Length: 321
Image: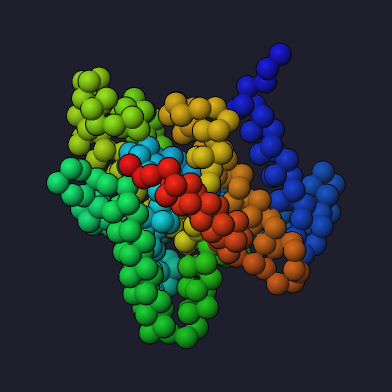
């Protein structure tokens, strides 16, 4: 009997969670813990796992939304500059509150994501609508520009906060804690359920505005709501752990290859796949060169950058729409 892909992915997720609990500078048997190992699990590894799952899940779903809305296989929050906009806005909150702005940082991240998305879409539009190649170039350009401003802000900040800020920018989860999880989780849930509620519109937009019109949908309204959902998810991810690239690019493609393009399946499985990928990246980063820890964002970039180049070559050869 054919096994449902959801159960397969959940089984893989359980294995990744067990690996993440077990591996690190000290190898631990999660089924047999002494008091010191229990403290390591509860205080250090469990917060990182929770943050990685929420953050990766948010980025996976955001990537699936953006690829469908803009009909661009290379779209994701990192490539389109949305993550950079959210991070720049959140950085001001981090520096102003010294990391105590539980509500301020996520809300600033949301504002930055929304503004950046609006600017990128406006630059990617011509008289015939949003064009994939224009959108991609606009996103990359805006992303580089905002990243440069972010680096400038960090270089002018107090020295004692620069290293922490730079690690945050690299997607380092070593400083993960529970303080921002409730607010970020709220943004994530709102964005996820908004996307699920507009899944019919997402399926239609992936086939073109004409199909959406034919189904009685208003493409502009659907696109606005879905971009809002992606911005909420991106803001949640940035508030949780900074900038992590390519999760939203790789995971939706892998999910579509597994279950097809229907948003009813792609969105929840992208959440599971994104969380699993980032959790695995964080585990690898803290295990391969102990006691040195490689930020999870660096690990995903090492995997995702070649993936992006392969996808770019395919899109170029096949012709971007």
